[in-house]
Amino acid sequence: MGDDDYSWDATLPPGCVPYVGGFLELRGDVRDGGWVMAGDPDHGFAYPRTTLRKWGAAPSTRSWHPAV
Image (tube, rainbow, N blue to C red):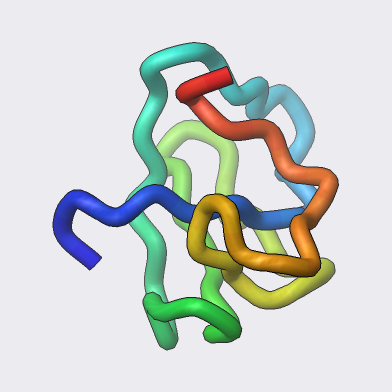
Protein backbone atom coordinates (compact mmCIF):
# COMPACT_ATOMS: atom_id res chain seq x y z
CA MET A 1 0.00 0.00 0.00
CA GLY A 2 1.18 3.56 0.40
CA ASP A 3 3.57 4.04 -2.50
CA ASP A 4 2.83 0.69 -4.19
CA ASP A 5 1.45 0.68 -7.74
CA TYR A 6 -1.38 -1.67 -8.69
CA SER A 7 -3.24 -2.71 -11.82
CA TRP A 8 -6.94 -3.51 -11.85
CA ASP A 9 -9.61 -4.47 -14.35
CA ALA A 10 -12.98 -2.94 -13.53
CA THR A 11 -16.32 -1.92 -14.96
CA LEU A 12 -16.38 1.88 -14.77
CA PRO A 13 -19.54 3.91 -14.21
CA PRO A 14 -20.89 5.84 -17.23
CA GLY A 15 -18.93 9.04 -17.90
CA CYS A 16 -16.00 8.05 -15.69
CA VAL A 17 -12.82 8.19 -17.78
CA PRO A 18 -9.40 7.41 -16.25
CA TYR A 19 -6.65 9.87 -17.08
CA VAL A 20 -2.87 10.00 -16.77
CA GLY A 21 -1.93 11.11 -13.29
CA GLY A 22 -5.35 10.29 -11.89
CA PHE A 23 -5.84 8.57 -8.56
CA LEU A 24 -8.49 6.18 -7.29
CA GLU A 25 -9.59 5.79 -3.70
CA LEU A 26 -9.81 2.02 -3.33
CA ARG A 27 -12.10 0.39 -0.77
CA GLY A 28 -11.70 -3.21 0.27
CA ASP A 29 -8.73 -5.58 0.53
CA VAL A 30 -5.93 -3.34 -0.85
CA ARG A 31 -3.16 -5.88 -1.48
CA ASP A 32 -1.93 -8.11 -4.28
CA GLY A 33 -4.84 -10.45 -5.06
CA GLY A 34 -7.38 -8.43 -3.05
CA TRP A 35 -10.90 -7.45 -4.15
CA VAL A 36 -11.58 -3.69 -4.21
CA MET A 37 -14.09 -1.12 -5.42
CA ALA A 38 -13.40 2.52 -6.26
CA GLY A 39 -15.83 5.35 -5.62
CA ASP A 40 -16.09 8.48 -7.74
CA PRO A 41 -18.20 11.26 -6.19
CA ASP A 42 -19.42 12.41 -9.61
CA HIS A 43 -20.06 9.04 -11.30
CA GLY A 44 -20.55 6.26 -8.73
CA PHE A 45 -18.62 3.05 -8.13
CA ALA A 46 -16.23 1.06 -10.34
CA TYR A 47 -16.81 -2.67 -9.82
CA PRO A 48 -13.97 -5.21 -10.10
CA ARG A 49 -13.74 -7.78 -12.90
CA THR A 50 -10.50 -9.18 -11.47
CA THR A 51 -8.51 -8.90 -8.26
CA LEU A 52 -6.07 -6.09 -7.59
CA ARG A 53 -2.55 -6.93 -8.77
CA LYS A 54 0.68 -5.33 -7.62
CA TRP A 55 2.26 -3.66 -10.65
CA GLY A 56 4.61 -6.13 -12.34
CA ALA A 57 3.02 -9.20 -10.71
CA ALA A 58 1.94 -12.07 -12.95
CA PRO A 59 -0.59 -12.61 -14.30
CA SER A 60 -1.22 -9.00 -15.24
CA THR A 61 -4.65 -7.50 -15.84
CA ARG A 62 -5.86 -5.50 -18.83
CA SER A 63 -6.03 -2.40 -16.67
CA TRP A 64 -4.81 1.05 -17.49
CA HIS A 65 -1.98 2.25 -15.27
CA PRO A 66 -0.98 5.92 -14.72
CA ALA A 67 2.72 5.19 -15.29
CA VAL A 68 2.06 4.09 -18.89
